[in-house]
Image (cartoon, rainbow, N blue to C red; front, side, top):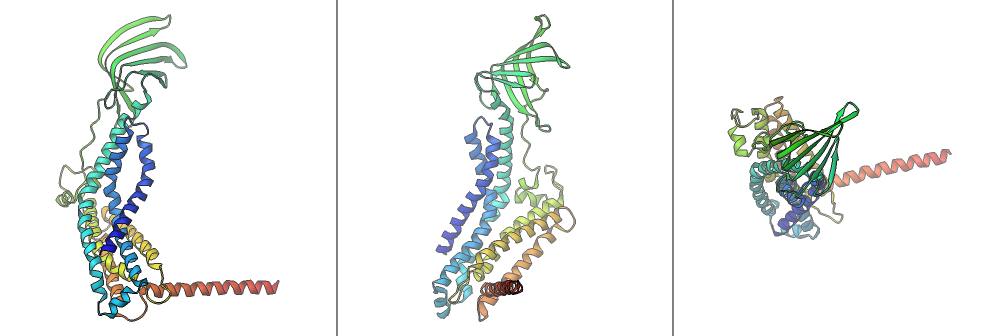
Length: 394
C-alpha cells in the first residue's frame, strides 16, 4: 500500500502539472491585459485544480497499481508470496482500499469542488474581461481608438481610472467638421454581456464641442455619461446556469427538471449526475484490472500493461462521454448511456482477474505481447521474402 500510494500520489501531481501547463497558455492570453495578472492567474489555476484532479485520479490509480505490481513481479516477490499460499486477491486488498479512498474523494471533487471551481473560474474570467480595456489607458499616456484619443491619469481600484481627457473627431462622411472634448474625474470600464463591447462609463465631467472656425459650441456638464453606448456595470450571473456548475446534491434535487432556479432540463441534469456517480464506482473496479495488467512472470517480462492501460482508460472515458451526450440529448434514457458501460467494464475486470488468479499459465498481457511479437515476426519475414523476390527478379 505504501509503494502504491507514493506512486499514485506522484502521478497525480505530475498529471496535474502537465495538464495545467497546457491551460496556462490560454490563461496568460486572458490575463495579458489585466490590472492584476498575478492574482488573477493564481485564482484561475486554483479553481481549475478540481477539474484536472478528476482527470488525473483514475489514470494515476490505474498506472500506479500497474507499476507497483510490475515491480513486485520483476523482483520475484509475487512468486514468493504465491508459493507461501497468499492469493492474488489478498495481494489486491491494499489497492482496493486505495481505490475506495479515492472513490470517496472523487465523489467530493466531482460533486462539489469541480462545479464551484468552474463557476469561480468563469467569474474571475468575467472580471478580467471587465478590466481588460482599462489596460489600454495607461497612466500618463495617450491611446487612440478609432476617432477618439484617450488620456488617463492615475489608475484607481478595480476597473476605475481617472481623471480622463477624451479628444474625439466629429466626422461628416470622410470630412472632419469638428471636435468634441470630454473631461471627467473618473471612469469605469465595463463589458457588455451580449456583444462583449467595451464601454467607458464616465462620472462628474464636462463636454465641449469645437466646430469649424474653432468656436466652442456649448458647455455641457454631466453626472454620468458613457462612451460607446449607455450601460451600467454588469454583475456576473448566479451559479447554476450550466449543469457543470451544479453540485451533485443540486443535480439530485433537480432530477425532474422542475427547480426554477436552475436552467437545466431533466435529461441533461440526470446524465451529468449518472456520469459523476459512475466515475466513483469505476475507481472500485480499476484495481481488479490494473493488477492483471501489471503481472509479469518468466525470464522475458513485458511492459505492455502501461501502454494498454492508458489506451483502455482513454477509450473508456470517451465512451462514457459519448453515452452521456446521448442521454443528455434525450435519444436514450440518461442511465442507459452510462451504466451498461460500467457493467461491461466490471464483467471484463471479473474475467481478467479470475483468469490471472485461478488459471495456470502466463498472465493475459504477456500472452498478448507474445502474440503481437509473433505477428510482427510474420510481417517482417513476409517483407524480407518480398525483397528477396524483387532482388532475384532484378
